[in-house]
Amino acid sequence: MLFAVSMTFIDQTIVSIAAPSIVGELGLSSSGMQWVVNAYLLSLAAFFALGGRLSDIVGHKRVMLIGTLLFVVSSVLCGCVPAGDLAQTWLIVFRATQGLGAALMFPAALAVVVAVFPVEKRGRALALFFGLSGALTAVGPLLGGWLTAWTWRAVFWVNVPVAAVALVLAAMAHIPGSRRREKLDVPGAALVAVGMGLSVLGFQQASAWGWSSVATWACIVGGLAVLVVFCRYERGVAQPLITLKVFRDRAFTVDTLVLFFAMLAFVPVFFFASVYAQVSLSASPNQAALYLLYFFIGFGIASQWGGRILDRRGARPAMKLGTALGAVGFALWANKLTDLSMHDQWPYAALAGAGIGFLLAPASTDAVNRSIGASYGEVTGITQTVRNYAASIGIAVFGTVLTHVTTDKVLETLTSRGVPAGVADDAARSVAEAVTGNPDAREPAGDGRIATLMRDSMDAVRLDFAEANQWVFYGMAIALAVAYVCAHLHPGTRVTEETVTEPPARPGARSGNDGG
Image (cartoon, rainbow, N blue to C red; front, side):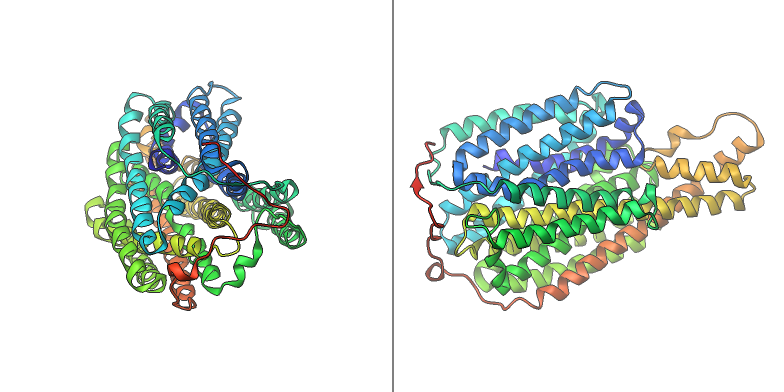
């Protein structure tokens, strides 16, 4: 199961490292590149609940295999994207189908792991699961930097051998077979997909449409309204996509809130830290990968401690410690961004990673442990939907903030250095649109006065971009601070083997065999 889900974690980071090369070859805009990253996350969020329910109905092993195959085929097609006008649409579409494959694969794989471990050992088991998968996430930037030096297309093709190993191991494993003969809530799946898609579209396009645009708010408010309709619809369905009764458990609700606010920072930091390193620090893809490795060192170590704290004392202490460390770490990291020194930032990057590491497995495991009255696959679908929806919103909102602040700061810098207002405005927008590239490769050529002024301003522009990123990283610190407040609302109760019962069948449900 680890081999299967490792591809989904690697893909969250590896594409960020390759972003400058993708933009350079295919000529994507900054919003287009953000959609390449976000299409994957949004598809994950939109279809995770569907994946969890399908896993329960069809069987964990079967759905995991289907998801793995869809994921790897989509990866190959992403690597085969043709140059030209079709490139951006092609890449976004197959990144979305990649996300669908991951949404089928992940809840099924995690449900298998949950099912085979008793509750008193589940904290350590899932800490290992999330810790190793997090470590594999760290492999993404390192592997991405090396592969990009050959061709950025290889960052997608690398999933093929990983999938092959996962499929062979899954065929050899004796996976417990259980499924429910129930109807799939197709209208519910459609509503949640539309609601999430519309709301994230509004946040994502705010940088292009503007926050005063009717289209921006129509998408955001319309998407949220559809999600409200989804919740009302689910309450009246005999066999819903999501059993909303699980939110009556206060601890489960708090776990979900902590995960939501933590994920506003966790996945977006891969993209924004990589872009910052390559623009403001003029780092190569390999150097940017090492920059992100500091974060993952802290994450990997702390995730194991977080699992032990969960087993011994429950989720609340681990979540409080993790959110506090994360908030402080991101704030101190943000403060150091304008020093433009990679080596001065590593302690704070590691501290931010440790904060996420302490809380991620305990919050996720505690939520799954409370799946009384619902299935493990379904509850996993809920928590992962929340996580990936939050990550999509984080990238969209922080991306909009970064574009606006970068444009304003670069415009101010260029005009103060004598660049005519019209030229400065065009240049500022160009730099903001090229946030996923290295400015060294786009310095103006020629010996004219304007070209000379622009070249002389590049160091200042890198600092402007670092200052714009400070807004993003401080925003991540605020998100962790809100998660810290939420963690205090957890009742502190622990789930033990005696409190866990086999989830009751839904009306009309019959037991079956997985056939795996």
